[in-house]
Length: 450
Image (cartoon, rainbow, N blue to C red; front, side, top):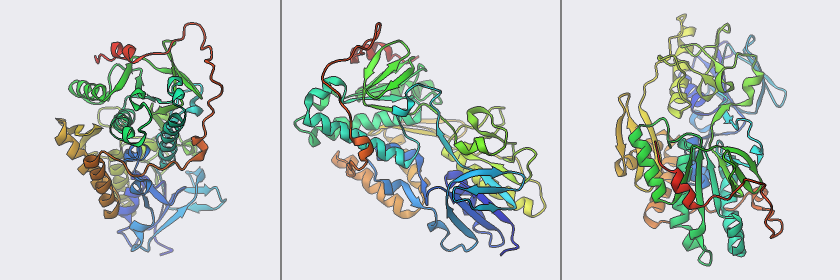
């Protein structure tokens, strides 16, 4: 095996795992898969961990388990700190260097805060750790308000979500449903009805990549469930206890969720390769990096050119297919054939809004579904994408429990780093001239979807 072609894959997300799983079937190819965690994270369901619908174990599966019968694949836990694309070599935080005949860079993404002041006070939702932190903060706020109901008037139960894309919209819907159906039974002495979920976006629509009909449907469902839509407005600053909007209004909040966009993981800046939009590595149509034969970049780490001249969106399906395609191209190169341009099979896009409410635009021609049928389709597709039968079964059990009992299981406040909230004194602070605290009635005026 030491003479077999060696493929080094950085990142165990959809792209890296998709590549490794295909190459695992080739006993004549040696694979080293590197990730800073020893588990694969199912990112589309992080918001369900944050809102207590799923347990962390439902969305995190061992990276080693899929390869236990494949002796040609080695999984190494470590963070890659440097890349030498010429030598096709990476350096880990331990100081170890690993060199291959082919190098696949699929290190994923990180939040893009767009230089927003105070971003360190937000709760992004792009890793399992993020989801667990957000879950603990949400539960901590309810616990604090239950002990001292006066905190509700100081914004203890105001939840501001930045970004009305899939992450923000799905989080807003799940959180609103949790507040409506679960928390009144858990906190019987607390006026839970005063809790607010506020979705803010500079755009004038929710779920922008979807159709106009879908925009209207999503907005209607969110508002029905009590979500306040502050569209056409951005968040210009975040503090420990507030979010300041671009129009000068201030929303008291100790929980600002960031779903405002992503950029390439920090490794992209240390890879010595050309970065494009979002700090991602620019690649050719065959997913290779220009002037570096045998080096591939894919998934959220790369700008993958689409046939229309734009780049493919940062979607799990794009990442997974790009990983599988890269494996095919590596097999072709080993056989002495040129790599082929990436062909993406567009199966559509989906978003969950709430109970029996989802949107699915299926196929390249975007056959559109709304409501219970789309809801069932969403559950089926996401279960199918999970790694392993056990994860699928456990997810369906949790989903069924939530659906039929209107109760949620893993309400675990286990992150003390975010559970301790400094409420200061009881005196209101001066927010400055021109600032104002928006009300739900203000949101109604802004919620018209264009």
